[in-house]
Length: 400
Image (tube, rainbow, N blue to C red; front, top):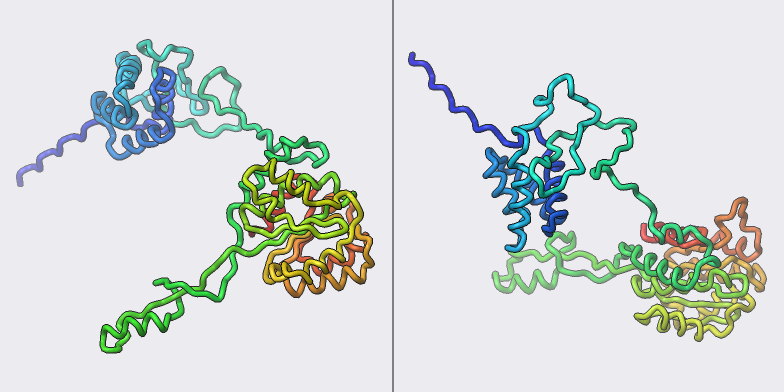
């Protein structure tokens, strides 16, 4: 039998054994320092292009990188200059670990040239696979080091007590709290909407379509229950014992009003509805109108009386099936028996009751105050609320 013809050898791949992501990031970094506007999207396009069509020559690599990275005619000059500087006097490719002499190979650290101008020839790129993870590396002056991660300014302010924050910090933290209210829980309503994936058959649309097919229900229309955001009602204490927390709680109520369409009330000795005032777009105007609306702030506290007044008013229907959030330290001048009666009525009407107490996070805290002790058996959660970090944690509990 005639000998089989040898298969033609596959053309050698230019960057075989090279970490494509490291190559693309280093090359794009040189282009950016040379003035070419290339970002994360272009870098990802280059990595994907090298994976789909590995270049077999420098010319193929040139066109692959040019198509992936160059978006404007004005960037061609900078791209050609950097590409020539990198590849005209570059070492032979592919440069892999196998190409490094055994005596100079280091499995822990691979030398990366740096300190060379991007426009000069022979600058080179880190054409090497990623080194294995090591416990600790010697500090170097390489520009390829990972930057140190530090907390943002808001993260540091969120841990401070409310009384140590200025109005600008309160406004910034209030906006951050508003941004965290993204996935608000929903509830199932009695209404239904047509949906092909629904489990319930919609009789009227099915019969209407059966009129076209001699009353044979050929097409079955299905429907599903409509889900709407769970209603939220906030009741915040603005008495003298809550003076330090009053401004921060106003920002919290504004966040719930704008995102969750909540009904908000403030109370000291009387109950005040703040929903229209806090729906304003400007935070300064909202705070000013809310402050002017509450005429009895920083006075006494009558929690049970105000809860009963809310239940008896025409706004009491908003409590049905709602998530009720009470923000107070529990100090009440009303007798505990009245608090028990008011909370029992609220418990029968609300979906859940969450009590935010600024003193609940203190070491050794115990609900020994008469009003707090009387209200606690009817609450689903008792959460601390002394800092914005506590409020953010409470929001995560509420949106769960």
